[in-house]
Amino acid sequence: MDDNILLRASVYVAQLLLEKQPKNRVFHNLHRTLTVLEAAGKIGRKENVSKEELEIVLLAAAFHDSCYVECYQGHEAVGQRIAEKWLTEQTK
Image 1 (cartoon, rainbow, N blue to C red):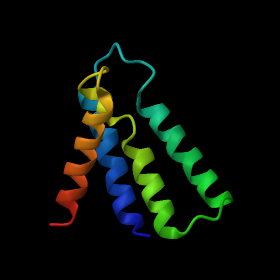
Image 2: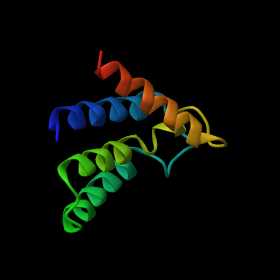
Image 3: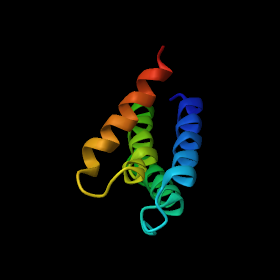
Image 4: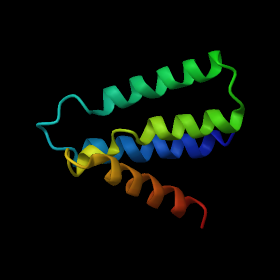
């Protein structure tokens, strides 16, 4: 597992949420993202998933609320685009 990519992703998402999230979206926020990230890690470790699988789960958890910076309706596709763009840039 590349802990560095998870750290970089978490910092990226935290900055994105702090800088761009509309103030009226009080539930899908940084606190919730960090709580979900922590819970996903605990569950993944309890389930003995592989390091590679855990990395995927944790990256998904880190990005799961990033979509709400742009919209509420149709947020799934936005979240996918945000994560895909950032992850692709990391491999260049």
